[in-house]
Amino acid sequence: MKSKHFLLVFIFSLIGLAKLWAQDTLTLHKALNYALQNSEVLEKARLDILGGQYKVAEVKAGALPQVDLSSNITRNLILPQFVLPAEFMGGKPGEFIAIAAGQYWTGVTQVQLNQQLFNQSVFTGLKAAKSSEEYYRLAAEVSEENVLQQVASAYYQVIINQEKMKVITANLDRTQQLLTMTTDQYQLGLAKKIDLDRVKVNLSNFESQKQELLTAITQQINLLKYYMGMPIDQEIRLPQKAIDELQYHAVGFHADGFNLDRMAQYKALKSQESLYQYQKKARIAEYYPNLSLGANYIYNTQSNRFDLYSSKALNYDMSAVTLTLNIPLFDGFARRSRVRQADIDIQKNRQDIRNTSNSLKMAYENASNQLKNSLSTIETQRENKKLAEEVFFSTENNYRNGLASLTDLLTAETDLVAAQNSYNEALLNYKIAQIELIKSNGNIRSLLLNN
Image (cartoon, rainbow, N blue to C red; front, side, top):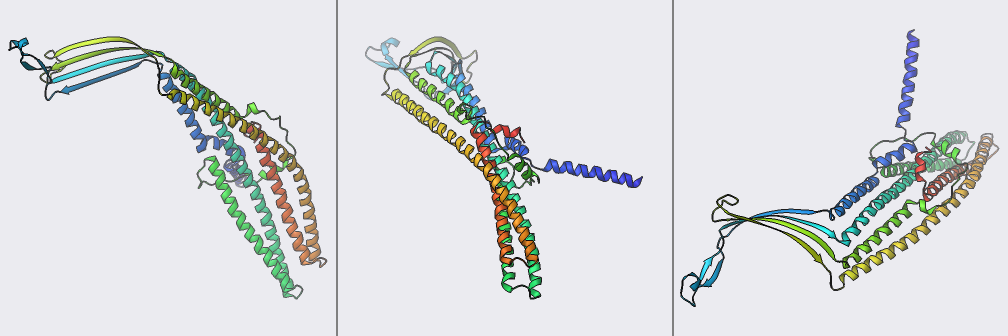
């Protein structure tokens, strides 16, 4: 009973470890979702959207009533004086006297209201503000697409280089075994010193390649973390079977055709075009008259003591309503210059749209062609790898039996490593082309569904 209990505990422990391993393994799906939540680039894009919303609120405020309250207190150190004819005060004609005016302490409190009744610039700005919200949203979508592409490309780069590491390690083990065998043969007088040295050189080369590849993998993993927005010192582990899934999926890919209107980058530029159009209309609107309604209420208080706003002070108030019409006549052609500047922005944006359209179309065509070529290359390199393996193992067997030279064996080994790496490179080129194709087709988010 105790042994059965121990066995059950052991089995459940293994299951728990397997689940923990699966949870800790960074799949492409997890990497992409992590990037969506933590990428600094996307966080900045989200802040741009939030900032755009505040800009809209700011523009809307221009069409709402503006109310201000101001209050000030003044201590007159020397009272102002009025000069009057002395005869007004019973003096001699032709003489003048100075009479102090006002009190030593004065206070003024004012409430002022202003409401735009007609201001074409403000109304055009409201339309532009609403359009800017869409632009910031599309700009964030462009950033998201770029981040997804960067993360996916970096992820598969790491996968392929890890597979290259397996190739180097396997060949390093074989070369180590060959060195041991050649050393024994040399000690028995069955091999030459130059043969032993050549095997040592091969072993040294493989060790150098392994060290270089380790450095490259570390750098690429750090780059992947950077694109994801993950701390560089955080440990990650990629699935061991990722290369198998990559080989399984590299059998064909169907794209649903190029559609420019589906591209976030293109849509963002079109939205920016609308913003520039509104900007031009806002400049033209500066030629229009504007009409505003104003009202104010003023409360004055004066006293020779600091008892303002009390019953002992002299208090009085006033109020007025004003209707203001402002007609722009001449400003030295400043408005005309601003309109022409807006025209230039529109023309530059049109050139950006044209250039981006061609660029996106080119990216799609290049990725489509690269994908087709990669599929063909994968099949060729798969056959080459299989053939190189057969040649190597056959040559290795012949060498053990004295039917092949060391030169033949080392050449076969070199050809095998080259074929294995070429096959892995073909897989990487295929996946990079596939990612570029779905991005240039506006479907990069499909990576979140297919992994």
